[in-house]
Structure formats: C-alpha cells, structure tokens
Image (cartoon, rainbow, N blue to C red):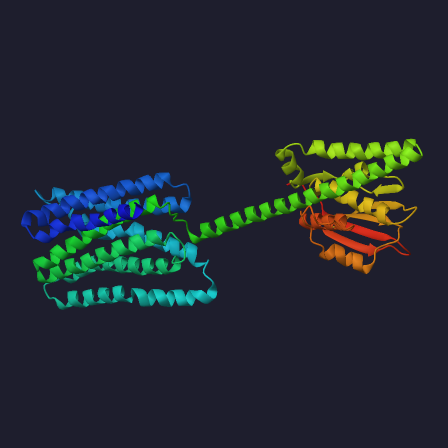
Length: 482
C-alpha cells in the first residue's frame, strides 16, 4: 500500500507538466503562471505547517527559511498573474525575484555547513571537500559557460549581465552546498530532505539554463522546456515534502544527532547500571537470606539442646533483619528507589554494626554523606559477616571512617585468619549469576560487594592486616549537594 501511495505521489509532477508540452499559447503562458503559483502556495502552506509542528530548533529553522523562499517565489507568481492583463507591479522585483527567493535557502545551507562540518573527522574533511568540488563542478562549469555566452552577445548589455550575475552566483553556490550536504548526510536518514532540495533545484537550474538560452536566441522550445523544468521542480519538492513527512524522517543537524546519541547512550548506561544493581541486589538478598536462615536454624537447633536467651536474641535479630529487608522492598518503586544514587548518611554504618558483637566503630565526621544507594547496607553487612563467619574464633572487627580528597575512606579491619591470595583472586574474577541451581561459593558476598562499590565509582581494596587478619578498604565518593 505504501509503494502505491508513493507511486501516485510521484506521478503528480509529470501530470502537472504534461499540459506544458502541448505548446498551445493559452496553456503555454497562462497555465504555467497559474499552476506555478498554486504549487508555490501549497509548498508555502506545508513548510509553515512543518515549521509550527517541529519541536527542535534546527528543524524549525530549516522550514522557516524554506517557507521564506516559497513566500518570495509565491509573490513573484502573484505578480506574474497580475502582469497577464497589465504590467508587472514592481519591475525591479521581476529581475531580482529569483535571487531573493534563493537567498534564504543559501543562508540555511551555509548555516548547516558551519554547524555540521565540525563533526566530520579531520582525516575525512579533505575527501568531503574534494568529493563536493568534483560532484558540483558541472554546475560551476555551466555558470561559466553562461557568462561566456552572455558576453559574446552584443545585444546583451553589461548592466543586464551584472543584474543576472548575483542570481547565477547564488544558484551555483546553492547547488554546490546541496551536493556537499548530501555527501555529508549520506549515512543519516534526513539526507532525503537534502536530496529533495537537490533534485528540485537541479531541475530549476536546468530550467534557468533554458530560460537563459531563450533570452539569447528567442527559441520558443527553450522557454517551454525552461518553464516545464521549473514547474516540475516545485511540484517535485511538494511531493517529496509530503512523502517524507509521512515517513517521520527527522531533519536535525549532526550536532543534534550527536547530542541525541549521547543522551541515549547515557540512558542506556543508566539502565545498564540499574540492571547490574538489580542483579547485585537479587544476589545479595539470596545470599543474605541464606545466611540468616542458617543462623536462625543453627540457633534453634542449639537451643533445643541447651536453651539460652542469647540464642533467641540472635535468632530474633536475624528474623527482624529479614523482615525489615522484605518490608523495604514491597513495591517496584521501592526497589528502584533503593538502587537510585542518593546521599547516604555515614551513620548507616552504626545501624549495621548493631547486628553484631565484638565490633567497634570510629567515625571522625558523623555529618558526612556518601554518594551511593541502599545497597551499601548489604555491602557493609556482608563484609562484617564474612569476617566473623570465616575469620575463625574470637574475631574482633574495627571500622574506621575518614576522608581523603573527595572520597570517604571506610576501613573494615579484623584480626581473623586472613585471606589467601587464591581467595582474593576468586573475588576478583568471580562472576555473579542468577542461576538458582548453581552452588554459591563462600566469597560471593564480597564479590557482590566489590561489584556494587565499583558501580558507584568507588574502589574496593583488600589488604592483609599484620600480623594476621584482613583489611578491606572502601573508597566511596562523597556526596556534594549541587
């Protein structure tokens, strides 16, 4: 269906031009002027509509300037119709109408070249310029030939040539710039707008050549060809504008394209971060709930043999922690909020350490805020839990908090048995997975902790504590209110 629609659209320029080829005087003169004015009015309305519809500044500028060109041409068409029964209202405008009509397009193309040329790699700029010169050399050559012919005709005055010269320079410049822009945009979809202008102005250029030949030799066929090409050019522009609008093709500058690309790249990276954090959060929950369940089960099992209030308190603390984590993640909004980068007060450390015994905390500045998310709770819990679980007997943990430059330095120091080099490598190389059937290694908590800290643009460092034990250093960016 779409091909049929496009095919029907493309037949319009040919249908409009057919009457011009009959050569009848009434059609040859009147039809051209009326039809050209109608087509110019249609183009003007479409361009104004697009200019109002466009949201992007550069797209709006494109159609405003194109509307200005169509407006100047339309005024010329109105004056041509008036001159059928009387003289041309403003004689000087009849001479400069083409120049005035082309001027907004020239400004638009120069603006686009200036804005977009800087986005071309330096090594490609020479090839672009050479390709543009070679591709548009024919238009320059035709302009030179036209001037040579004009100067060779004695009946054409120098003043007439000088009046024609600015129009010739502008027309040739437009063709050169259109070719350059088409080469520049050849890899992006809005090249079709430039192609539409290039095609339309090409036929208009051919029409001007034949109009020039008619002015020199007075051959009627030359004027019929000239006016047919001009009418075909404006009609083709009308058709292509309608077709492209149906295709929703943007006409942004390369600057806008680059800005959009960066914006979407940022959004993609943002999403990638959120997915990674969600993966980490899921693994943390799986890992932590597993640990909590083991602690509760062991406490209950020991309690059956040897009742103790401490065991009940331990089990209650773990169950309370599980309940808190589940209640904090009831909805998808709360899950997303937990992953959102925000200001985390440094005293969150004290809330975590209340779940353990034999642990001391020293915070130099309790008003500090870290730029992180709620996963930091799980990070710190896993590091401390790992020290007590795998550090052997009588383990003590000390947490020191200080600052260095724009970072908060959190040191978790234990006096346990320490970590082997292989265990450190496992943490470095281990890949977190959501496969429920895979046995989770003991060091997955630290692996996930490191993944989280790295994701927050921090550093996760493992060192040996002399004479024995482990020091884990978290370097996290401080939150600075914008």
